[in-house]
Each structure stands twice: as structure tokens, then as C-alpha cells.
Amino acid sequence: MTTANARSQLDKKLRETFRDIIEGKTVKRAKHELLFSGVDVSNVFLQELEKNNFLPMTVEQVTCEPGERVPAFYVDGTDAYFGWVFWEKFTQLRLRKLFGSVVRNEKGDWAIQISPNSPKIVYVNLRQKLEMDIEHPADA
Image 1 (cartoon, rainbow, N blue to C red):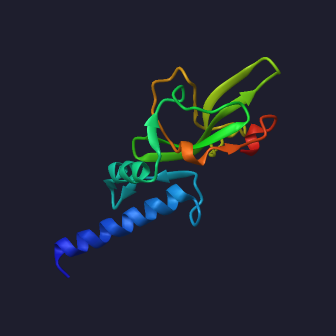
Image 2 (cartoon, one colour):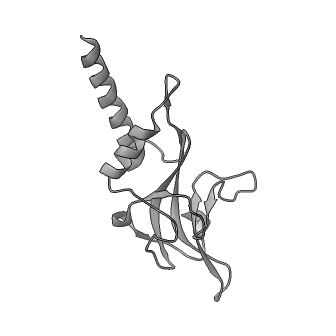
Image 3 (cartoon, rainbow, N blue to C red):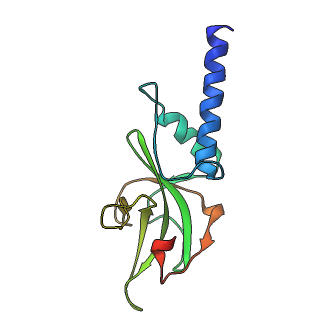
């Protein structure tokens, strides 16, 4: 096998692995390190996100209503966090929209929280919007 052929096979396997993470069918979507043999491969992950309809936008730009959630990834350097953009309900009159990671902190809250006024980019698939129980967003 030539070096170019070996690289092509490696690239194919890496992309397949990233698709498995993105789809969440055979790999649990949580926090994933985007390093391969010490090399940053986050650019390949971002390419695969976009190929799978996960588009870059701020939380503010994500279209979802209270009672809905949208799957999203937040990429921070060489770490990718899966989570949801949704509305958290405090009272009947007080709601807040946010990205919350499925990874939790020691208090059991979302380890990564991104508000609508943040310029941070999340990669969102609006085609996979789901209904959720606004009374229990932690179950999302």
C-alpha cells in the first residue's frame, strides 16, 4: 500500500468515526477529543458536521420554541461537546434559551452553557428538532 493510499484509508476511517459520533447511533454523543495521534483533526470534524446538516450559528440564531430542542455540537479547541439548544423554564413568565451540554458538572448542571448573547458558535441541525418536556430540561 502506498503512503497516499494509506492516508486516504486513514482519512476515510476518521470521517466514518466522526459520522458515528455525529449521528449518535453507535457512539454515545458526549465529549469527544478531536486529536488523532497527537494531531488536531477538529477541521475534519467540522467538515463532517456541515456534511451532516449541522450548520454554524449562535444560540440566538437557532430557531426553536419553548418545548423544543435542537441537537448541537460546541467545538472548543480540540474538544467537541454534544448538547441541545432549548428553553429552560424557571417560572411561567421566566424562560431562557441556551445550549446545554449533555456532559454535566459536579453539581449535575450542564458543564457547558452558552447563552443567546454569546458570540460562540454551535453547530446545529435544525432538521432534527424534537419536542421536549420544558418542565424537565435536564432529562433532555
